[in-house]
Image (cartoon, rainbow, N blue to C red; front, side, top):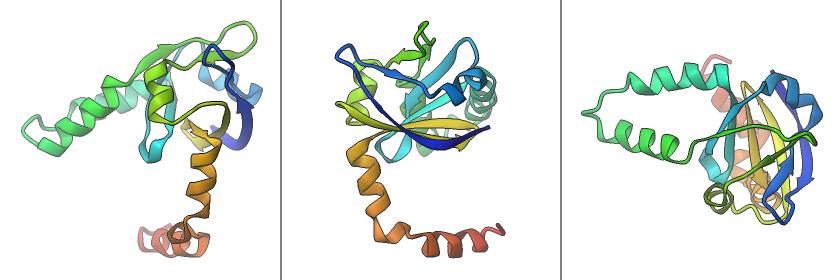
Length: 143
């Protein structure tokens, strides 16, 4: 399970250090793709395989399903960590997440999210996403 928030810098080659606490759970290779809310999603291979199976079962006749699958798979890339624990973020993914230099890496249970520092701060400053509002909505979902 991935939990926590870490700040790292993207180097001039587009690499970022993956937090050491996340490395073991990522495994030998993992998948990085476009995420929602202008961030990147990072999945261990096993989690990606589960998600891929679910997405492949969506009906081809549903326009929204096709659009989501295209969005998700078109940005996906297989990644490995180098000996220093860094991963290269492809330029298309850096552009999607507006990653220039300062980044935030967060653990979200079964996946990791990579945010630009500015986008993360903006997301957290959104009044509609206050903890009280979110808690009320989670209660509606039975959590």
